[in-house]
Length: 457
Ligand code: SF4
Image 1 (tube, rainbow, N blue to C red):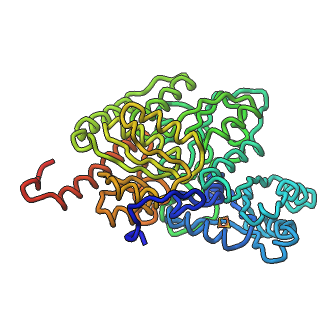
Image 2: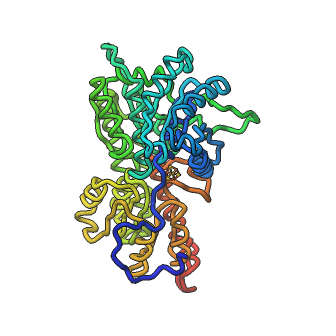
Image 3: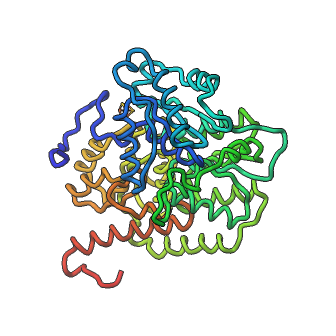
């Protein structure tokens, strides 16, 4: 089908072809897995839940658990109260999680099921055992995207659990956004090296990146504990990494518990990581240790060593808005030329922020929110790029147009490095440089005439 994509662009408003996003519940499910001892619960039909689980499993290469209210025709007509009550009873009886995090699907949203009422009723009827918690987020897929779902569930953690006891604790909250467990692990490593006590939530490291030891654990050791989520309301400040995925929860925490927040962007690349380090230093009252300064220096060194291969290269970038905003910033620091920058998620902030970053360096770049891969392919056919950066779905365009392709963001269904190696922080920046230069130089080695085929680069 992609081979048949035409260069002729016709106006279209109400149609997306190969959208660069997926369902809200997928983000909510992923965020819920970042709570220790949590069972994500999908209030809708089994088909949605199966798709959401399998999509996440294909990205993380780990079994992703979730339960379902298993709607059939009856629930679709009369509402899902009976299904939810039965489901909560079964979940606590059979699996005994500490937390159940309920998200909705299109079907239960269209019916208009009142989830807080259902949770209240289950509590009154003694279905939710003492010491156990049920939280919820509304995640209709006909608005927003998986990014919105992640933000909604993270905000629900604050709304249901965080408390201001009146005693401030010498700790910071860090809300990392929709990043891989390897990224969360890297953030924690950097923060520990800085000597700052933090609560990271949600935290899927130790949940979706477990070592193989021959044992299956339904509730692994990782994840933010309920006690930590409660204590987040007593922290000195919150560092929220990402406008779309983290700022809503940080705002909720400020309004509910008076915890001031610093609105940052994802620490991808040099200057965005600098901003995180600066914020940790300011809010945590610490100095930057030599180890972190050396990591920064190594990234800077690699950027200048490899500059000749990146300079002036036209790039197409596809992905989740928080990822793309920070990556585009990094590309400008490498003197690359972002040409087409799209996200499937809706939100005007994306276009404003990316255009602001590109104002001097690439003012003609096409920047679109709520866009799709078909549009991107048509633009590329009309004016090609040197590099495509995006999720696995971009491989079709890369193959058809014979353009170097670097996988980045969510989902990556056909590679495994994202599970283990971060893209955040200075070390993540080094990895991105390596991946980018590998695909660019591999392409050159494959395609260039003999006289330009070099052994040493
Ligand atoms: S019905 Fe809605 S929630 Fe379910 S898979 Fe489709 S878009 Fe996603």
